[in-house]
Length: 213
Image (cartoon, rainbow, N blue to C red):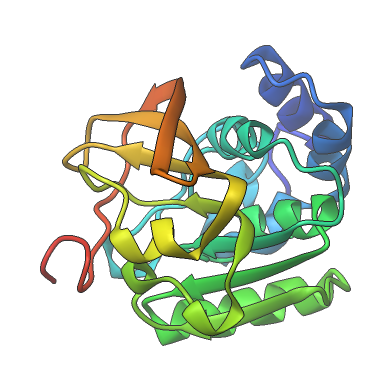
């Protein structure tokens, strides 16, 4: 049984959080979050809240995902890298707004679930991979935009190298648990810090160029 919330409630919550991109709001409306959460949490799928998933992880709060995606300023034809697939809800939003998405997740079972969730929604412009997200996916670089859904005190060097000149990167910067979500731009000298999009709490980024697992 669905809960008291509806997809329209989620869209209103995202708009109330300051997201004004109508393409993004339409993507939120068109992407049923109930299809991207564990069965035991379907009743609260349309609440603007994180939801626990396997391996001590949580899904990103939808309004927070939307603010991060809005920061990328996607026009519709971008080649995007997502670090941290989870169960695929944010991946689905990116896929509706960009040309194609490469998404990498540390946990194979989460990738299996995300692949099934995306297929059920007919979303096909996504490549899901299992691996160390802190290393990026160099074989598909460069990327027009990169979004990192886990925290580390700095942007991992491989991600800087894989971002095209002028591209945008959004990452929560901090120790894990209390972060500033920054928008960066790729320049000839490296990354330029543009602005803080929001404050938030994120799980840690683990891997060779993140926290030791």
